[in-house]
Image 1 (cartoon, rainbow, N blue to C red):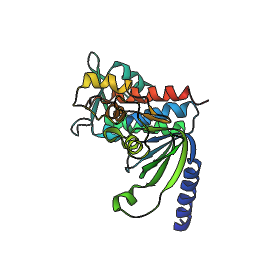
Image 2: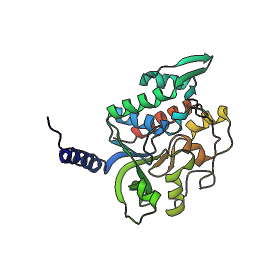
Image 3: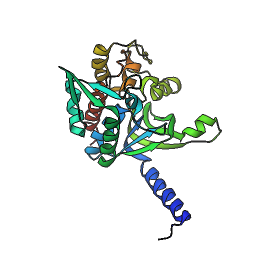
Image 4: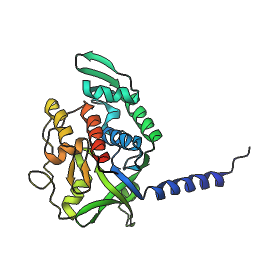
Length: 258
């Protein structure tokens, strides 16, 4: 068969356009495709909810790819091992309560299972703003990451979601947009983003799950973003809390998505 470059181009453009159009009015929009965002998306899609992830970078996986100091091994605790087992990620016992997993296998497997469950992933797209109606977050304003990096004056597009999840990690990008632009008081002690504390893995792993919750009407936090918003410590290269956080938020939203 003789390949036609124009047909290849048409196929890509048509398929992507259809995928993006179908993602403009969905149940849940997740910003950030790190381990927490991907785990959350998986459990929502598994329950047949319409979910899309918008990731500003070329690759998904957040900080999980690099393990600790670019040593591509991750550590999870007992409770989180069950989630890796569910995804089919192999783990090895290091000591009682500590399990190791290959970070490359972890990211690629979670991503594959998530996409096969029905999650649509849009990489190289950034959330530059949010939609707010009647003091409730109800969507995102999107633009190409390349536009943002080049500082070009190019207008964005908008999408609608019943719920939005900020899974952007330490930066808490979506929550900070809401804080800066909407006038909505956040559900933190100060009413604002409290900022993350210094590393304390034992406390951080518990608080990241506790803090994964609604931060204002229509907007949830997930993963390290949760501790950045609610003032918990960072936890370093242990990723169990990230996975547990994603599963918790998915469970809460499934109770609201009828």
